[in-house]
Length: 110
Length: 115
Image (cartoon, rainbow over all chains, first blue to last red; front, side):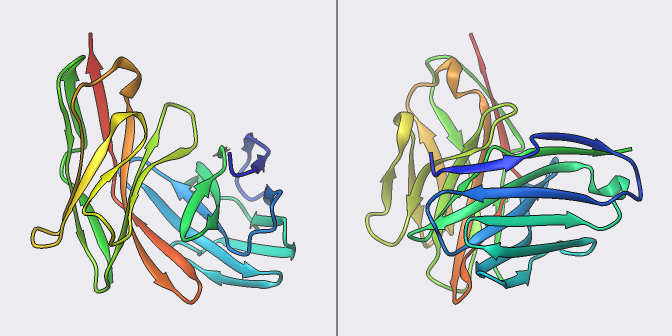
């Protein structure tokens, strides 16, 4: 257990509404990541952070933004949710070059 | 650029028989390679990791994987399947960069274990 929690664990929302997902870690690790998981694609990187206020884009960043104002929290925001963003979202942290994953958030956009 | 191909999207075995999940990778660097397991409606759990030490890597729950550079493969094996091994397995390659280790995932292999 790498001390990662995600909230909410499940969310149903409507197209066009903003959504924020939270990832929280308890051990002050520098690197944090957001992924989405879709059938047949494994996990794909959305955004990552290498410190407070230091973030960068991943492979599938369109339609997503992130913020990290504290070491322990990494927020993922969908400014205007679309049905194509229905997915399972995982947060991860890096410890000695190995990533450990949170329990995931299942997001459904109707 | 790096990539990972898991050669089988589904594998079905009988309980007590060997498991083989195949993975080929492409990387410009000396890669780190991982296998993760995901049980239904759960997060990903690290099974094992290769980082250029021994080419045969032992992981949790009796799994092991062998790094073969000449074949660019990192296949996962277990001598005897258990019902609790039914899950999805992901082969992952890491590119160590200044921004932390960036992972590229294979598409996953769903392992089914028959009684």
